Image 1 (cartoon, rainbow, N blue to C red):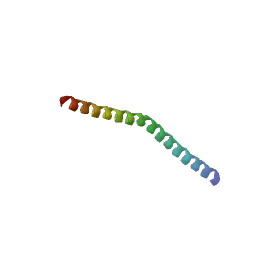
Image 2: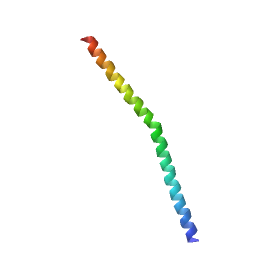
Image 3: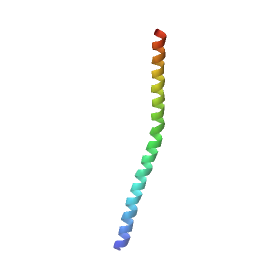
Image 4: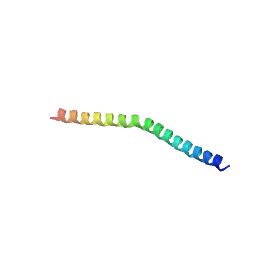
Length: 57
């Protein structure tokens, strides 16, 4: 009886760890494009400011 309970407890722990890993990977996949887009927007804004400064001269 103790062996079965131990196997069930280990299986539950492994399944929780697997679910947390999957959630972490999905969260990373969702947030990664936002970071890339934010970097591109920041770069374009800096280029616009540089062009405005150059135009004013």
